[in-house]
Image 1 (cartoon, rainbow, N blue to C red):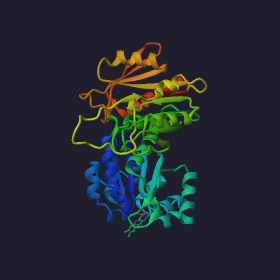
Image 2 (cartoon, helix red, strand yellow; image 1 turned 45 degrees about the vertical axis):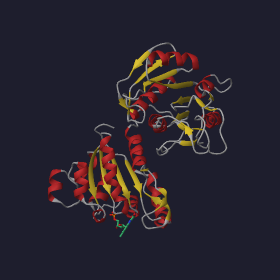
Image 3 (tube, rainbow, N blue to C red; image 1 turned 135 degrees about the vertical axis):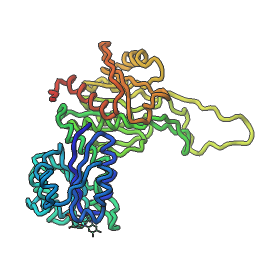
Image 4 (cartoon, helix red, strand yellow; image 1 turned 60 degrees about the horizontal axis):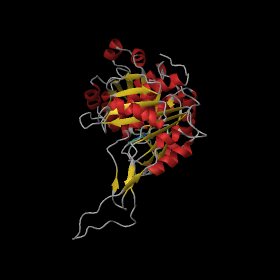
Length: 405
Ligand SMILES: Cc1cc2nc3c(=O)[nH]c(=O)nc-3n(C[C@H](O)[C@H](O)[C@H](O)COP(=O)(O)O)c2cc1C
């Protein structure tokens, strides 16, 4: 998404404050923002805040002589890679559906030849109103992309659908539209595992690891953005479910295996979860009490099921392509090669998860891709989302899918 230009139209709703976060998070990912406000939007968020965060002047007036001389509403609407309307008020949606052009925002939305994404936000009754729903249908038919709204408690105190999609969800939708020139995987069913597992010792204690799920979730999101039908089986993580993905939440390795087997058949399985190798041999029904005398208890462990090997050696429903991850702290490539042979998968992505690498829980990753034919490809250190996109491209090539651009 590096350097892609977003023209952000801010409508007059309470959720306008979330635009500031959208700009911040988007800029961290390399997006560039230029903002346009409606008159009403300025009641909710100041042009100064938007300009400061975007690092660009805010455009507000259709009849500003300076703007028209310097830029013009036509150029403004076309100098972007994507136009995003957030929050998209009921009023803005109605104007767009009706083809109105009585202020800068509506005029540029009518004049643009770029994809448009709207993030509606309003009171649940406004959202449910037949007029709003009619406008939405019209906009979808006109090729406008829609993200959200979500259901929950709103600033007006009511509950229901109408809350603007979370910033991360809007960014994922932006990403999906901007990277639409990658491979297409419509009709391909993909299983992705992500996050750690949690292996209970008693009702309050468990064994786990430092996996954040960021890489696995990014992979699920990237496959979904490429049009694949994605089932994500996730251990406990502090991440939102990726948009457009069917997410199954599990806790233990055994639950993760059961959810993976239930997801079969799939063409592709990517096992990115850091599944605990062992679990406490006994799961105590009550909290293990500390006693004044005697030595501390010893922990007896037993093997967990091997999810990657189970999928790769499945007698009836082996996925066409099984991709594993090898998290290593030493001799990364050698250990990963051995793992690939042991598990019977097609590809292994090996990464160094030693404490100095910052990979576990961090935003970046450096992977070595090892093929079952022995070939090795080392990728540079990349954002985990970019690792995910490269993996999607690689998988698409393996499946014989066309990769454009
Ligand atoms: C406090 C307050 C909050 C509002 N919140 C919303 C909202 O979340 N969504 C919405 O569609 N309209 C909301 N409105 C109504 C819009 O501000 C109003 O329809 C305005 O004309 C929209 O202008 P715009 O679409 O040009 O930005 C709100 C109004 C007020 C006074």
